[in-house]
Length: 380
Ligand SMILES: NC(=O)c1ccc[n+]([C@@H]2O[C@H](COP(=O)([O-])OP(=O)(O)OC[C@H]3O[C@@H](n4cnc5c(N)ncnc54)[C@H](O)[C@@H]3O)[C@@H](O)[C@H]2O)c1
Picture 1 (cartoon, rainbow, N blue to C red):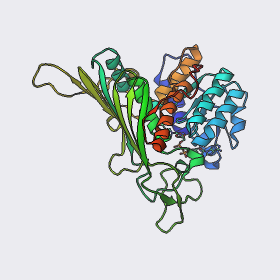
Picture 2 (picture 1 turned 120 degrees about the vertical axis):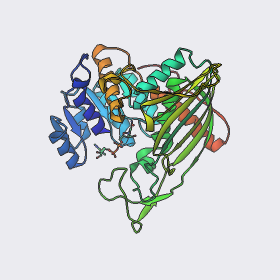
Picture 3 (picture 1 turned 90 degrees about the vertical axis):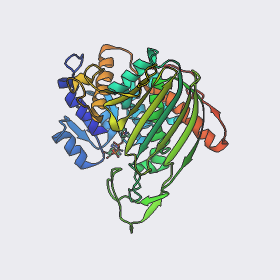
Picture 4 (picture 1 turned 60 degrees about the horizontal axis):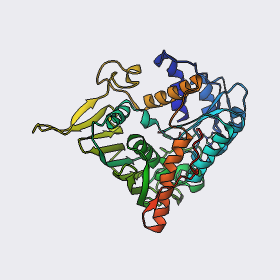
């Protein structure tokens, strides 16, 4: 994700002519020497350092992007806050709900601006879906289905990298990808008030990594193995504040769905369906008396927000990293113009409030109320 954000910075001037800032890639921190070298030679950072404290505390840095493994998020954010710098963190912000709350409180106390990388909220067709919901085109919302079924962990020889270790990742799929699904649901339908759910770990052991392994690395059957310490699968039933019901499923080990970050929204007058695997298509059903009515496909195009920065006309596709460029552009534009920005750390707390209730339901085996872990504090 560090590379994705760095590429965004490089592209922003050519993508967004109307802007109030110019990004400068000042310093990249990484413990891996080859990544530091590439940061300078291929990405154009002015310099690269091994110790992240040196990057955050540099006088010539205004904004910090946190793209390290989960357990480094909070210390990095706290250091950025102490240095009075705006901070954008990749999700999930720490690995456990209380860590996300700690990051939010640090930013609130320091009065620094924050942003969180729920990049799918910036998909032009997701923004259009929100517009359709808000305009009443779907009538009253009755039900929401969210899912993120990814295959990134489906290979049992996939290495035991930081994502599978409790004190490096925190929780498993509920931190890693349910955070995307819940942030989408809250963005599109509103607050979730109560939940009940279950979890499972389907690949309990994985080959131990050697050296700097990305989460796509692969071991051999004869390699020594270690335990997976967090969940591969989670599901959840929920109720929204507006009375709608919801169901969620997330998995990193199912075989088949490769990156199915998807939602369906059902209302009394229509419904919508979107799936990251078909990022440029939104399915829309409009209730009419016409016997031939059915789902229609709305293709992405320049008539939807931000799409035209990447591809002109209609049905010319955009891609995943374009969403990262849109979120980075909007965050920096908000900083440069002193405008409000969402999703901030406050919205990340909204997400982990739901995660916390789900985690409690795993043990209690009953419905749990969603409680604001930040005690109703609204600071940005
Ligand atoms: N928004 C999204 O869609 C999305 C997608 C993937 C990952 N993420 C998030 O981004 C974060 C990073 O994930 P990733 O897939 O890029 O991980 P990764 O393991 O591929 O990369 C992590 C990088 O951090 C570096 N690093 C590790 N320890 C460090 C330290 N002490 N100091 C400096 N650098 C250090 C590693 O060398 C590596 O270059 C995670 O929090 C993850 O949840 C978000």
